[in-house]
Length: 154
Image 1 (cartoon, rainbow, N blue to C red):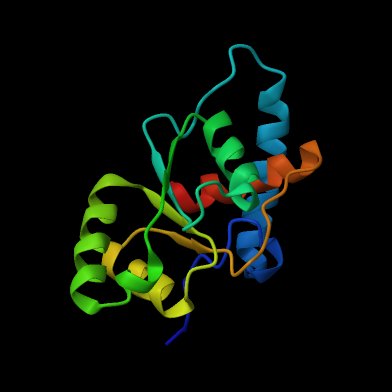
Image 2 (image 1 turned 180 degrees about the vertical axis):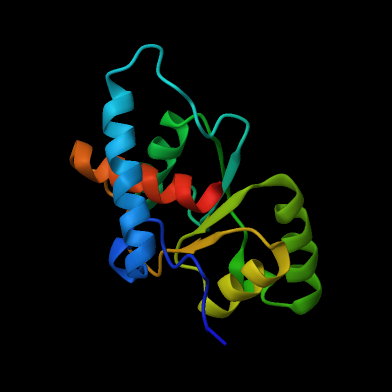
């Protein structure tokens, strides 16, 4: 059995198996071609992404939020108070609610055990950052991040 979230991070392309990497690269090419078309499509329209981060602002996930919004997704920033959520009665209730409200969940600096439990309990893609930064500095980074999101949330 695989340990840890099945979607380690939407910006960790290298962690994907070869066949998924090829799929993501094909999606990057489609996104590049679609950028010049008018009107621009919103393939994640109607989809919702929760960003769980205890800080009032989460600049580490700003690139992820922007990439998702450009694809038409709604993004909500939730401050979960992780230390209180580690109690089993609270995590199950929170996971059930998140699973009903969101199509995917991005976690920043949350304990790995909490992230794993969220994914098991919600049945939705859960992305763990483990301190990584989703900084989009170039269009190629944005396309890759968007392709990873599209492939995980479809």
